Image (cartoon, rainbow, N blue to C red; front, side):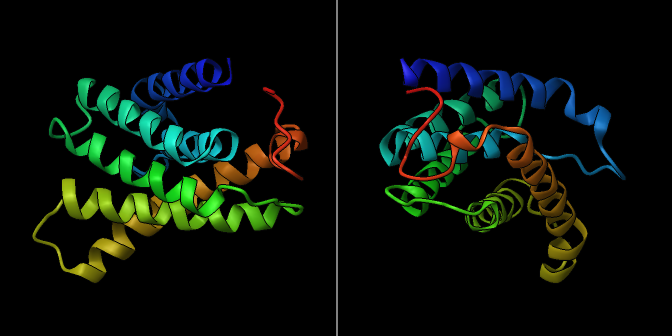
Length: 164
């Protein structure tokens, strides 16, 4: 049942990402809801399912024209595995502990995305400061807002989850 709920939430995040996120872009920078949901999937289901659902999320985004077919699946699979490894069997008692782990995950995602998919002739540092950092900060801001809006039962304590 939990797998089905997380799958539906990931599907909704992909639909929101490809349809609505461009409308809340600031200076051409929009947050990425899919990577946040991959992190919550790792928190709720563990490494194996977050890797699988990461692959499916990447496949869906590739199907909607996200990037070269297969690259999104690869990047989201890597991020799902990394999220599951970082988050699996850990208890978070403060929102900033979880936000720190998510920050690492979000940065890894944008780094892989820009250097595997959107690679350009720009210099390394220009890509970091002009592309990756703004998207990273915007997505992290959305995550922090979500942590304050969502019930604490989702992420606090000993793997208690609202979907159990």
